Image (cartoon, rainbow, N blue to C red):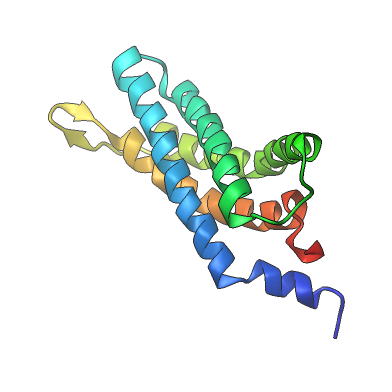
Length: 152
């Protein structure tokens, strides 16, 4: 049996992935709420609104993951918590890059429109697609590097 077997088992945990995906839904709602409010109500350009939505989602998801998905994983205390928060941002930077690239492609390069009550809402419909693609990257890297599930 190889040393990587426990890490793979922890990574493939259906319960943990289910929790992570559930937290992702909370993050997606946070992300899309900020995206919609900033774009539709405040008039911020949608790529900037998307970036603000992503950051909001990262903070919300980190806190939920910290206290639910990965509860008991990682050292206790304020210092280790802050270290995980910084590490989470660094680890998620790959997922953020993927999400922003996919979102940019869907909204800026494709000629797709979704008119609802006289407003083109394609920018909101494209967001969950980008989120879903980035979620899988985030799950693997968060599991292995932020909460180090293979060390538990």
